[in-house]
Amino acid sequence: MNLSSSPTIRLWIIASVEPHIPPARAAEAKRRAEASGHNKSLYQQTFGPARAFYDAVFEPRVYLAAEITPKPRRLCIDMNVNPVVRQQFDYVINNGSSEHIFDQARTYKFIHDATRVGGLMFHWTPCLGYENHGLFNAQPGFFFDLSQANGYDIVRVDLIGHNAFCALESGDDYRRAVLDKSALRQSMVCAILRKTSDSAFNPPIQGVYQGADATAYELAKVPRRYVVDGRHNLALGRPSSQSSTSQYSYDGDPLVDAAGGNNGIVAGYYSFHTDLEVNPWWMVDLGSDMPVREVVVYNVLSAAGHIAGRSNHIRLHLSPDGVSWSTAYARTDDFPFGGADGHPLRVRLHGQTARYVRLDLPGRTVLHLDEVEVY
Amino acid sequence: MALNKVIADFFARGLEAGAILPGGDLLEIGESVVVAYNTPLDHCLR
Image 1 (spheres, each protein chain N blue to C red):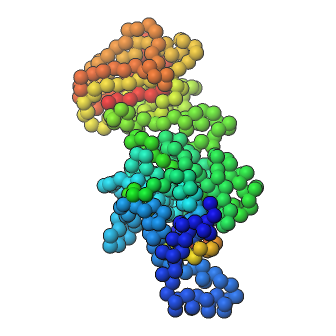
Image 2 (image 1 turned 180 degrees about the vertical axis):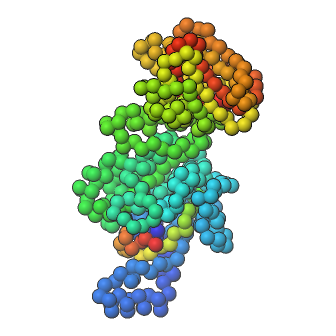
């Protein structure tokens, strides 16, 4: 596209810039620029809201701007204090704003929630070489990881510097970009992403570990299951514990190791691991009495059948107080159940009320599972 | 940040790709301003 002749740029110049230059201001800017020997002061002039430009590009039916400070006809939002989405939009533009907001998770969740399915999210935010602008600079791979976690279609991701840009194929692609065009050593990352489903926002895990840490990379590719089939996983992120740890545990603290069992990641690996002991158990505190209609247990997937088979006779117990327990289910099959392969153990209940949900195994063995979901 | 030529170019590429259709609802997060067409990117910081 020849931008100097494009309708977009012509409209930008005509509609946004020229009418907004007060002659006296322009003359003063020119005078100062000449006095200082350069024209930096002229650059610092602003010519009014970008709305005229966006009107020309998008021809929107509805236009709304969100700002942290109250202004007439603006949506006043502080992203740090749990912003509420009251309506959705076809186009949401992150105008070099996210880097100024401390709570990145709420910011990108808000953008996700405010975008209609099929709608586009436009981001332009500093990336390379902006050492003291905003609170954060996005890494080149950030929007790839964000898209991976949320199933966004990537329309394009560009690294943009002054009079230079390069389309990125991946986060690591920035190396080629800055080698090819040194102007990109100071650049913004600009992304157009399409929301493809109404799934809840899923925070990304950095995918840079590809090659260096295959497990972390595999985890990054697995969307976490905050809402499954429209149901909220009551166990997700709740305090959990287990009877013991072992040399195979991820952490020596049973409270930390147990957290892998309800972190929303179903990957086929064990997420926690007890020691070899009599009746090993894992449990989660739902926080208050909740009606429990289904517990879904994801087993480890292992070529060695005896590893997955350790959980053949798993039992499910419910408790209102963590002291008195009732057994709601005891599996008797002698073959392993699945997990990330799409065949987890589904224990359907009748809405029994419980605050604590515990899984254990009879006899002397170890308990290691991939994930536990409670609905 | 302020909107200059290189950012305008980015949106133009979105238009060119056919991604932007007229008549949608638009939310701008952080109301931007327009600066001179050839303003260097590092002068767009605000």
